[in-house]
Amino acid sequence: MGAGAEYAFTDHWIAGLEYRYTRFSSEDYTYPVANRSLGIVGFSQQPSVNQVLARISYKF
Image (cartoon, rainbow, N blue to C red; front, side, top):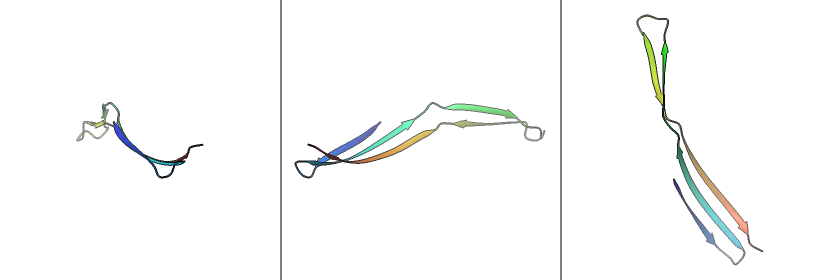
């Protein structure tokens, strides 16, 4: 998901700004640990990315 905007500040020059958010699927991991008091250790991971893109264009 995301959003963006462009603005023409002259007849030839255009500036733009875009935001994009990406979330990837969740993964669960478990690991047996040699220390008997801990037993099995696990965690869940759900990576995500935030991106911002700025641009300036010249139209011929």
